[in-house]
Image 1: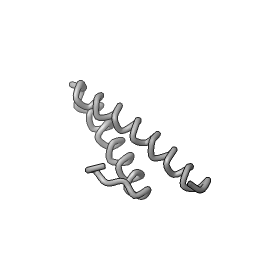
Image 2: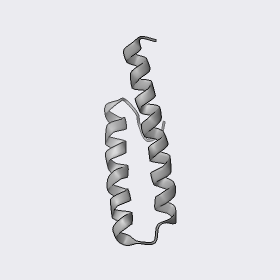
Image 3: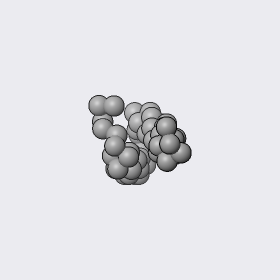
Image 4: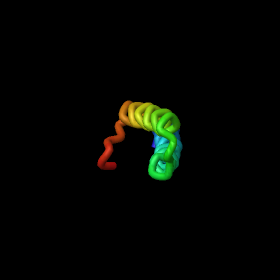
Length: 58
């Protein structure tokens, strides 16, 4: 892999870890305002992942 490909893979891995945490927090959250914040964060993470070539079925 080229250095650029390695950087993209590392960024994707990091974003996926954050996504996993946000999904877990969403499952356990009861506060509607915080749920909205988490949902917005999840949307942002998924849009960043999509720009890197990730799909939800990955």
